[in-house]
Length: 296
Ligand SMILES: [Fe+2]
Image (cartoon, rainbow, N blue to C red):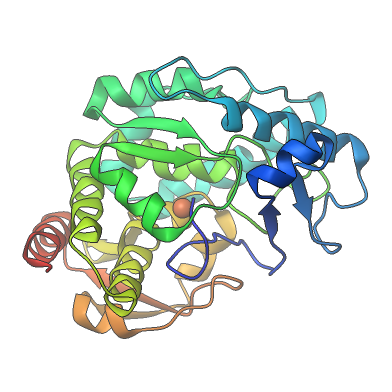
């Protein structure tokens, strides 16, 4: 996940944000590792906040290349995972692209219990070579996107608050796994993620980075393509939210024009009213691949 300035703070509906304290503040008081805004659903839940801090600590102490420690999830949080899947499963059948459905079948994710990142990353890596690494919270767009060039997806590990199972004000493990990890199990989608990371590495100016981050937003996060004349999602932000998938039907679907996408501002705090739609998976893949390769 990365911060909103460059691309994605994935929000199902609202606009609160979590922020992570600096390292020096972390050392000063680990109990306050994660700060939630007062309108965050978990703000008044001390138990939730303690758990968020514990999970953030896993990321803070994580050494790349080592197994990712399991996160503690409560019974209520396991129920959140089940609720998300109950809403998503029928929506996927109708609105997910064939490549996604094939990958989700291949990964064999439990619908009953939140899969631990270590298990998920092992399966993704076996499929495409991509890995997940835990992060405590929001990451600078450049850091997030450049890590993709190394085949590394920086993933949060906490889950949204149980009081709002179908809404999250920030990317959580449900978005990361159901959206990103599944798509990263596709060799072609994983390749596009690597290419955008490499393009970011060649990008110097903040303005150019912003344009590239918008392309990332409108494709890898919110991309749509046609299958037999029907709009289907291949973007992680759409595929991990039943609300977004439903809203996709009402969106203004524009032809896939990456230059236009790079100039199209977006609001991550509401459903996306404008989406860019490719004529097919093949067209999406080739257009994006060529765009990222030629980017300078
Ligand atoms: Fe995302």
